[in-house]
Image 1 (cartoon, rainbow, N blue to C red):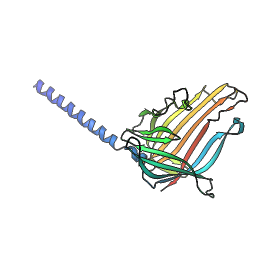
Image 2: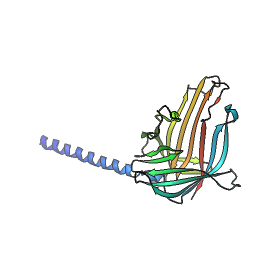
Image 3: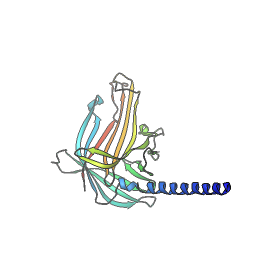
Image 4: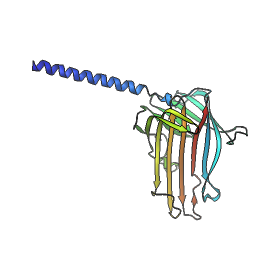
Length: 250
């Protein structure tokens, strides 16, 4: 009798394990990458763009503001035979009184594992499966951050992490009900607020927020490198920042 009970108990445990695994798989499948990063030709996003750049002679940082329009223009097949999307960015003044001016081109390649995004010839892993709270990945794996000639060593070993999954997020005049925050990086070396008396101080920060069924609704990126030598003290030319806030989309 005891032996039969033990056998039944083992079978029950196995069944529970099978159903638990099945349930977990179904949960992962509901969070497809393209739910948060829709890619359809003709899709257009209108953003408020705040660009941070060094002022003349690098003595301070200033912010220049624009409207930016990202338009998914067409598809193509990349060198690995994968379907990819060509995205054009246009900019104009914040009042929208001037005509659009072409600014740059981005490329997006969705796969089952991640979404690759090429910006200024740098290939980022914007999103990575599975979309789960706390999941993290090395998003700059395809970027040369270590060689002697690299100009983007500050991007080395950035580990993106999903936070606040399915939370609401407010941008400008709109609240988006279901979003995920991609926390990218937050570091100041040496630590502490900006100190112009330091010989060198470097700041890196990155965060993006994606809304389900919409796409990117908020982005903030900042990198600056302050150096006192050689004189005069200044922010290095490569210092820059970008803030995007979604105004509307079609």
